[in-house]
Length: 200
Image (cartoon, rainbow, N blue to C red):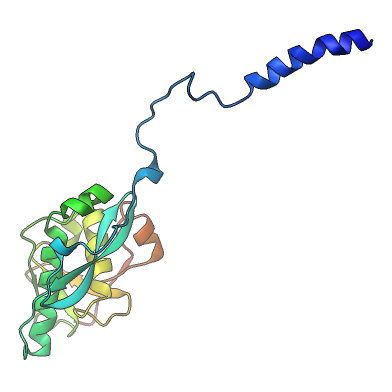
């Protein structure tokens, strides 16, 4: 019995050795792992910042989520509040539509907001805090609308309550869109939650 046990030990050792990690013997290549997307910059990205202007944040796509990055928007001193709101909103749209810097692209940032998108203030019968886009939100991708809603809803262009009233041109229906945790974490799943504005 003792002899059998002694003979079994080398075999047991060989089996246990075979259960170890053997990454160097069986190479695999499944592409970049999700954790390989950094979604953070090593330091201030000076190429996207200016010493003059209003500090703002815009939401870019990184991996499967929205991530805030710092920007600046130029607004002349003494600009009336109503005009200032629209200028800030247009500056945010321009920043969202611009191609991310080289450092941001290296960190995994992208944008889905199309270029040439314009914004104007409320129409004659619109609420004072409404913004009208040159392209109706329903005609934009869910990614683009999520970027717009989360960027605008917490900026000087709105009340800063986590929502923004948006509509298309030509007096189309307005909706109040919300930037929720689900929108930030899953921007492409569906359009951000919204409710129609009926009192205009």
